[in-house]
Length: 482
Ligand SMILES: [Zn+2]
Image (cartoon, rainbow, N blue to C red; front, side, top):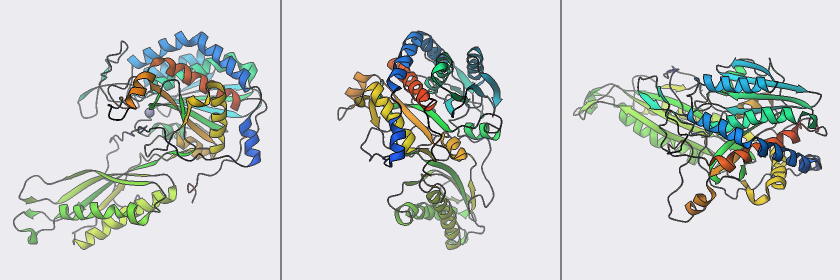
């Protein structure tokens, strides 16, 4: 059913992904990699400690440079699809490190490839875009950048989602993994992705031949900052971590008239009101209560005056799910309830239902890949600094890569908050710290950065190690292919 009906949306409409809904470490049951073959893979090799030492020493030697790069990126944020300067810097860094570099992939995307002998191909993704937010952190290196929005308004621009940390880590990986290339064998594909915040970048890079023109990855890896964790800690979520995100527009058509004589009109506001109540029964009555699902009517526009019944009512709905089966059930259900509502209220025309194309599929962290990362992180950082996080209904377009390739993917989290302030914020009744997308979100540069670089470095070396088995057939995400 979805996709049927006139498409009402404008291609310019911006869908801000809420790319990392704030989540507090919880006690979700861990997904275990229980079969014995997986277990030996998870245990990895004995060299992981030596690798961790190598990565640690590289990170300490290069920390000052990385901090400088980070502060520069933070002060020079660029909006989605306009990441030209950031992309130029990434490309320069990749080239200087000796990578084969391609620019302009899917807009401003950059791909750096390093072939270093036989072995697996690892993709590491960093996203480059910032948000239309005026920074209020008071940091010395706070952004003063402004930009013009499509509607002509001026906005501040800020790295309020930590993508500056992600780009710094990506450039650090480019440099580090060249310098320690005698320690690994395989192919590295580093990508700087545009437009994550509007859910378009991953799709644009893939449409531009990411997996045809460059080596095809056996694993996909990324990190994201997390404002729910103190700096120096790492978070992980096995299995589904981010939701399928759909934006749906529904227009109810009525027949306008005088508010005092409703019997001579057909009131689209009343039809919309009835629909808003009924549509919630999709989640409460039709979807398995153990399956996450959200239907939120975030916007309703109709009418101009107390006593005028308008001709139409326009609704904007966000729809969240993990499995593809539940996604289909929700989208089909919205269309069915909207159509039946129109019949009930004798609307002169069926409703117009449009599912926007900015759809972002769920992120599924391969449980075996995740367990392997967790084992490494715990041995390198101590288990008290590695925290299991509950999944979120937020969206992230990183899941597209692993889904398209049918290979294991992992996005882990890196804490950003000052540990003392974080501890204070946990006391019941205290004010929460500013989270991602807030104008006051201010990651503590250190130890956020060194933790990100160390974690990504040891995991990359592990995945590209000589004794690495070929990519395991990933567990298919439950429901993803149903
Ligand atoms: Zn983000």
